Image 1 (spheres, helix red, strand yellow):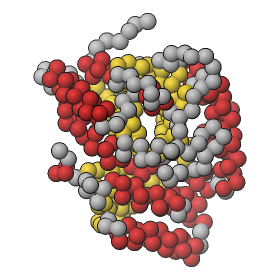
Image 2 (cartoon, rainbow over the protein chains, first blue to last red; image 1 turned 180 degrees about the vertical axis):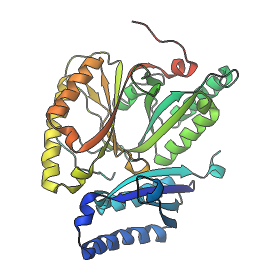
Image 3 (cartoon, helix red, strand yellow; image 1 turned 135 degrees about the vertical axis):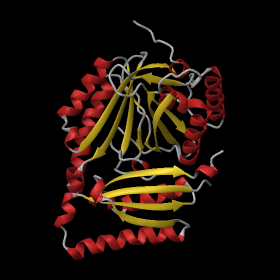
Image 4 (cartoon, rainbow over the protein chains, first blue to last red; image 1 turned 90 degrees about the vertical axis):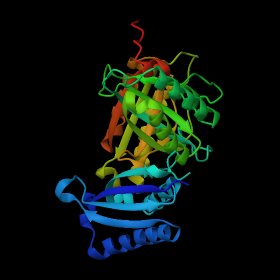
Amino acid sequence: MTESIWIHYARPRPHWYGLSEAEQAARRKVWAQVSAASSKAGAAFVGNYHVRGQHDFETVEIWRFPDAEAAFDHWARLTAAAYNEWFAFSNNIGLATEAVP
Amino acid sequence: MTLLTEATDVFSATTAGERCVVLFIAKSQPRLPGAFDAGHLSAIGAVLGELEAEGWLLSLRAMVEPAERTEPTAFDTGFAHDADVVGVFEAPTISAALLGTVRLETAGWSRRFATQWLVGPREFAAVNGAGPVIDRKWGFFALWEWNDAWAAASAETRRDYDAECDVAFQGDLALNVNIAGRHRLDWASSWHHLGVWESDRPETVDAAIRGHERAADFKFTTSRHLLGRRRPLAELLAGAPGETS
């Protein structure tokens, strides 16, 4: 187990803006359930920050996971819920430097 | 293994469990006196030996044909790209893959190369080309992401697209190209997938990619392609000149 940071940049894809507010909220609710399950499994949500002013993406979201596999699992559940079809993204994984031999 | 899209006629879901690709795209660092010496080269060799003992595959050849253990191998790409060396390993797990990259960097790799390491689990099994036994000295690396048009397309449109691309992949195999399956990178990259081919020469790769263009493969993707000639990794690390023929 090597504690890992997971950094997720995102912006809505164009067809996201064609959804009604209710349709957007319904999808966000499903993805929030994915995040809740990750938190329950030991992940720590650090925060979600607006970066559009200096970046191609709109937001950056940061998580700490117990290990890299947990980060992969979190993302696999989000993509299974079609998150990647509504948001363009770029992800990074990093190992805690104090944990690396 | 979680699949980002369904298996096709050419590609079947892997039974390889958690195995994980380690793609490296490396640029040579300035060779300042003392920055990288025989001691670093030896230390990297020792780490590579440890990784192999831990179940890593250290060449594209071994990823296509695991029974065929070769020396650690990569591809010389500087002639056509802004990266000098590109290659793939396969690690037993995601965590092992990430830790392995740090072990290599710490042993001296980072003194020799500035490297982008991309890591992700195998989705599809390797597929062998059709034809006589040949020496495939060239590696072709395709990174791609699906674009907004793919994301907005219906499931039926995507299935039709996969079927059209499968025709192109059949064409690749008919050109006696080996394909090392497909790996999923999207969890830790902006790229969604990696496909790596073994081919006899660049002209074959070009002919194969023309088939993908005819199939409109790229209407739904943004891709980065890298092509390189196979060389022992030890030679590339040492900065030894390659063959001229």
